[in-house]
Image (cartoon, rainbow, N blue to C red):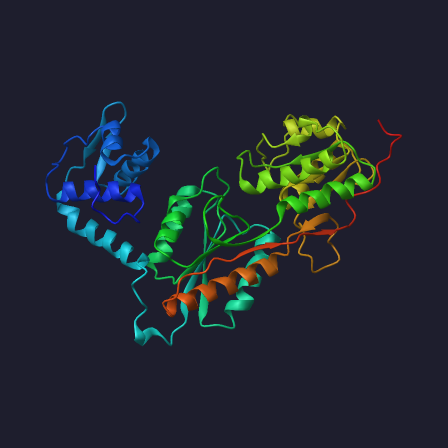
Length: 397
């Protein structure tokens, strides 16, 4: 099919628009069946996942309903709601349209920037937000934060809600997922100013600020190696192959390759989930720590490092006498004497400041009708040696 719509519009949105028009014009009537997925794939020359995403969104917005094993059908009563739905859809497009400018009478008011994050439950997030606010507090922008609880659907809704609230730019800390959200790609297609934080999207040209995860893992392994540790475990509580996890594991493996050592796959611990509330003595990670197979642990987030510390204590192991623990990010505030964890610092406050500055530059470019320039900043991580790592005692089994 030759599609007459703007070729820059994502394909799944083109499919949605086509069937919304079919329903609105009553070419498709209530309870009438939508063509099968394979027919839509051939009509639009797209993949099955693109069709599935388009139909799922139509169902969510109330245009169609789906019966497993039978197909998709036009929702009853949809024609009474067509005008309202089309107006809502039009409004969302207007908010994202690069040609829409902020009205002149509002030019003196502070404008909204949205920050989308999975959670704010550790000092990493707090330091990051502090860095962003340090920059925005000196500007004409203010910050609104939305949390996604690491849900892809919530992330999508947060992006759309902030656009409806007329945010002029977004700072996005993407969720842990194998694939990025289509709405982020749509922001790029619409030339809407946004900056990714602590993540980047392979193969997609965007502005981002993150920490060099490969270098961070290398710093961690080399520190433990210099202390005499050889059985060094690397742990993540996210079983999803995210780019951050992959980069850190790559850095971990690179050190062993550089030293001519074999990589032990059993020391790469990623295929598990953690109940941070209850201590489970039968949990695979608990049993692994109790086995004393590894003498040191690198955790890919601070919360997991705290959890392993508590597990070790319950098992009766001393840190760092029996095992060493090194975390990515400092579990403590870093502003007091209670910071005891050896960790890889990602300079979260600096990360937030640089992301805010890049976004403000992009907003200035858009204001002056200039082409958006993408900036990529990869901060150098730092090793902070504290009390949870120590020399390996070779007399111990």
